[in-house]
Image (cartoon, one colour):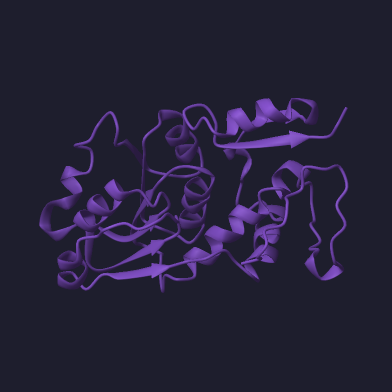
Length: 230
């Protein structure tokens, strides 16, 4: 992690080292390529799982990372993908990304109840919210010897240690990416993963403040972009 933090790319031109550049092929747009970074985060998270093909997967949190985790799980051949969030808008986008079912845990808090029966249901969980309430939920629905990949970050939280130990759950932290960035560009260029549904808003740079406001309203937006085109 870079300290001190560097500012992002809210500019028309940005100078970077050649070693940081990856070629794209095909008709991939700049808007899509701008999603390579969050997609790489999800590809790296998936590498913490030995096998996803034929598995039942829960994605908790349907922001940009959660929605892209859905796409990555689908790409890796997951048998069933359920996504959980607090907002209908983000859940609708996650369904477009390849989820089989969505649960609005705010309006339907009982939505996970059936999945907690028989010691749990899901083989793999990608936890993308880092919310305290999520900790209580996901350990209820993970199968014994299942894997939870912690992608979301937050401050101190508590967790049910008895379930972690009793179910022999593998709880793995996943941080950013490395070689997966080039993989992300390749998958988009080859149209193996479609990131377009997560781009819910595009604002001209003159409306930067409106763009930031939209990006903070998860009831209306998932991924917000800024365009320098006239």
